[in-house]
Length: 121
Length: 107
Image 1: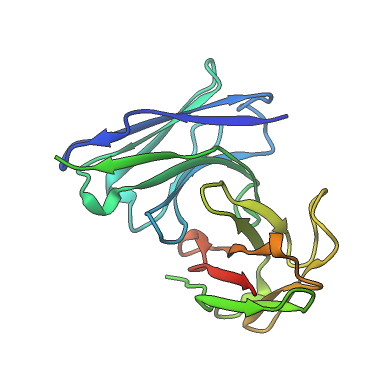
Image 2 (image 1 turned 30 degrees about the horizontal axis):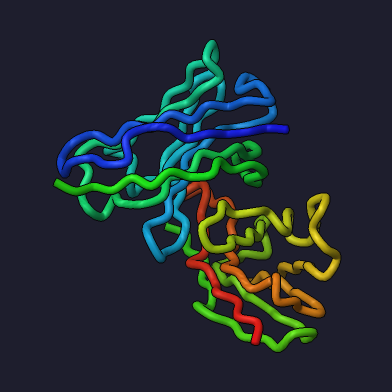
C-alpha cells in the first residue's frame, strides 16, 4: 500500500522560502509509470496544482507559480521536495503531495494527508 | 490558460440523483477525472478517464464527457456522499487543471 507523507515547517514568515518534503513508502519513487506532484488548497477554497517531477528529474510547473517554485527528487531517500520562494499570506494553504500518471492523463491515484503551512510574521 | 467551471453548490434529496457538471472548452476531447473530498480529508479519486470507477468506488457513481461538459452523476444519493467534488483535466497550457469544486448537500 503506497503511503505519502508530507513534512516541513507549519509556519513560514512572509518573503521567506517555504520548504516541504514528501516521503514515499510502500513503493518506489523511481517507478517509470508515475510522476510525483504538489497540490495545495487554501483554507475553504479549491485545489491548485503546483508542479510535478519524474524520477529522472524532469519537471513541469503551473505557469502562475513557476517563477517561485522548485521541485526536486532524491531517489536514494525515496523523497521529493518543494521549495517556494518569496511567500505571502496568499500562500497559506494545506499542501498535498501526490502520485499521478504521466502528462496527458495525470490521473492522481494517491495523495498524502496534507500539511497546513501558514505564512505569517 | 485553460479553465474548468463547476457550480459552487448542488443539493439533492436522499435517494435521488445528483448531477455535478464541469465545463471547459472542448472538454470532450480530454480525459476528465473526478475527486471526492470530505472535510479535513485528502481527495479521493471516484471517476477516471471520463467514465471509469476505481476499485472500491460504489456503482452509484458514474461519469460522462461530451462537447464542452463533463458530468458526475450519483444515483441513489446517500448521506455519506455529502462532500466537495472536483473535476480535473490536463491541458497543454497549464498541465494539471482543477475545477473550482462543487459542494454537494444531501438534504
